[in-house]
Length: 380
Image (cartoon, rainbow, N blue to C red; front, side, top):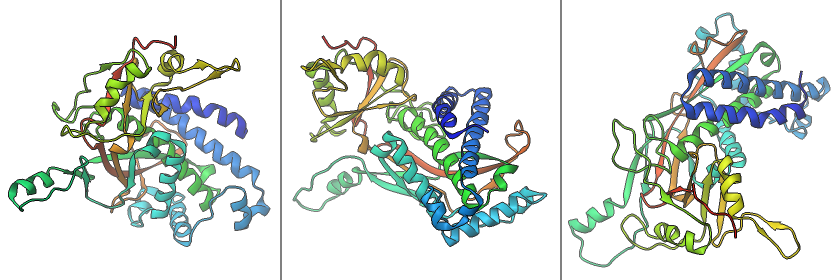
């Protein structure tokens, strides 16, 4: 069995392959990446479990070693789930198992996602639980004095948008080998949360950045109108030739005006760029030599946080206001782990499926600018 250090070294490579496969719509590549991904997580959990000796079954000892101590509800859920998974006919056993995954598990998954995925922590990311639809404010309005009339009512109505959450589904399948079933509820919880955190966060980031709206959220790169068959086009890319004040000012001015043409103050922005373009374009354009002979990186004329994401198309970037992107995700009223026959290419493991429901989109059309950085100039 691989040690933890080796597994951690392999993690980034595996996650990059998984992200590329999800974005590329290649079923064969996705299957291969998911096999490597699930095996990596299982090996990591098994390695951690093997480091905890049999004498560490005490709750306080497990907690001190980073193992989540289950609540009574979580323990009952996972114990019953293990019973179903170990049965001769898990599909039948789980069909009759109506207990929903405890909300505390989903809450911890959300917290893990926010901790490990900077972009998803920056946006307006909400656990919507079983909500059917949410109302969001689409622009920053101002109150006015005057007579109550239909015109004002219409204007106020136009300031909000309904986002149906049940239209988009995010599924994660969970392969479980026999060795995992022998570890007990605490370690099954650790595995399930790791799978949900990594796989769901990867899928979410791809959708938040570049989702086309067809069965997935609408990304920062996309126009909010003009869809064809439910697929929304990318915005026209604005050429950004430099990251000095003169180059950034026109783009920042666009963000400082809402969709209705009203000015809005902005204090900071996020720049999302794929890793390769960061090092070949953004890094040379934002790294300056200091008086001590060293270098200062990510130097911008305006407060800007850089996030590297494989979801951004090559030679492009997104500049915007992260809190102006709304993403709601929840387990849903029928949310539970189910036996799945969908992935039969896996051998010697049982495969389970969990479905989450939600949706996301920019709150208005001017909160994000899609950039062409092909000719981005380095610091002179």
